[in-house]
Amino acid sequence: MLQNLNHFDVIVVGAGAAGLYTALCLPSHFRVGLIAKETINLSASDWAQGGIAAAIAADDSPQLHVEDTLQAGAGLCDRASVEFLAHKAPESIQSLVDMGVAFDRRDRELALTIEAAHSRRRVLHAADTTGRQVIATLTARVLERQNIQVIPQTIVLSLWLNPQTGHCEGISLFDSNRILWLRARAVVLATGGGGQVFAQTTNPKLSTGDGVAIAWRAGAMLRDLEFVQFHPTALTKPGADRFLISEAVRGEGAHLMDDTGRRFAFDYHPAGELAPRDVVSRAIYSHLQRTSADPATACVWLDLRSIPEAKIRQRFPNIVQVCQHWGIDVFQEPIPVAPAAHYWMGGIAADLTNHTSIPGLYAVGETASTGVHGANRLASNSLLECVVFGAQMALLKDEVEGRKDEYTGSDFSLYPLSFSLSEIDWLSQQTTIEAIRYELPRLVWQSAGICREQQGLERAIAQVQLWQQAFITLPLSQFLLQLPPGQPAHINVSDLSANLPANLLEVEQSLRLWSETRNLLDIAYLILKSAAFRTESRGGHYRLDYPHTEAHWQAHTLIQYEQWWKSEPTAT
Image 1 (cartoon, rainbow, N blue to C red):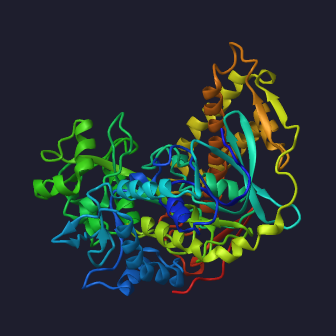
Image 2: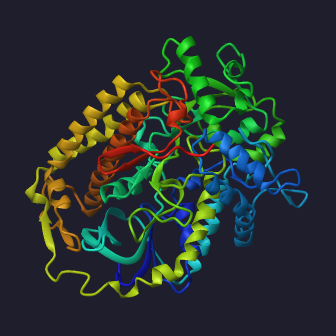
Image 3: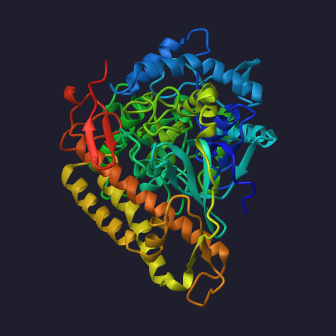
């Protein structure tokens, strides 16, 4: 159980690259609570293979990095944000090196590779487990810091807003069998993306869009939620997870082939396999639609055999190992691949110092929409964004300290509410939640996957609304959603019977399922509504019924509560 709950200066929700780096960059005299849904070293960042982009080569420059990013972003990047990202990149890399991240080297120089839509070799890497190396190093540094209290395996339920000022002054969370409210002068959401809303995704199971859903329910402004990047090459084999086969493999010379052995990608773009991700994903999708009897289960092939074996073993040992586990010898045969949801370009609208529209609430990393990715993220800019924008929290020292005297009174009631599990039909409730959790990702994949159209989107929206209504009427939902802000609660597990969970662990798992399903329902609704709102095709958003990019849609989709509207046109 949590101890010493009062007096956090900053609560950081999320322990991926964005959350860890943010916590490290906060002033060392701040008391920081770092909340992890799982253990501290398990996150989507840990799965990142390709690398982190920075213009550090002699033939490269931040301006070239800017232009490549803008080109990939399809007219929706904010130039000032992109320039900030690219120019901060070299010093961010040096910061990681100084912390101990062991990037690959060539003759003592940092080794660089190229990935799709980059005009220069600028992607640093640590074999094919760059994210794991970064996370391991950042985790070690966090655990050395006495001012950071790591709070693992914790479910965040909601934001705590001051009813008079609208300021965010903390969060509610589930810990053991207690629902607690934690105060802080500032809350940073760094919860990553929401790939689990799609049936096919490279994201880990914890990527359920928690930060975006929680912020939306509190009234934060969101932006561009229709833009989801589908990675072209995820391992596609019955029984296997959709393991990402890094874009760096194609950067080193791997080829995409169809069942006949033909390199079909050039039919769709002059750059072939090295076209932007959305182009390659649609190329695979379209090719399978034309050539396969069952496109939903079909795949294409990624052939590494043109790359020297020694280089494959050195650069991609993890890919080799995972493929071997699934009976694929990459030195003798191609890898079966198909697209899968990978990265969410949209998120909580945030500025260059991570401010959101709610005072006291900040967003960093994939959870945020800062304008650096536009309609389609450039490869290997995601880890970079986590580091560059995580460092910005150091600039907010005076702002956070200025809230010191806002909080008065006791944090907790002397008589917390109690909720007995015997008061509900637990098994029936579980069945309802599990059915929604199973069906929802399949619906979203079918209706808001790589290609979308109005009729399918409207049907999916209507179904999600029905599920939301069923969900909110559950007894557990009624109890949790009516809990007054600041009012703690106990889940009473002392009267467990044969019809109830066997132990506290099962209660915790059930409450996590409830929380994640609630969040997935909300982000499914947000993605579907946003995809229906934008009647054009651009970047990661492709409409079969509106296949062209329209000049009047060179604007952001903005959302607050149930309102959707277009921003002013973005600069070209």
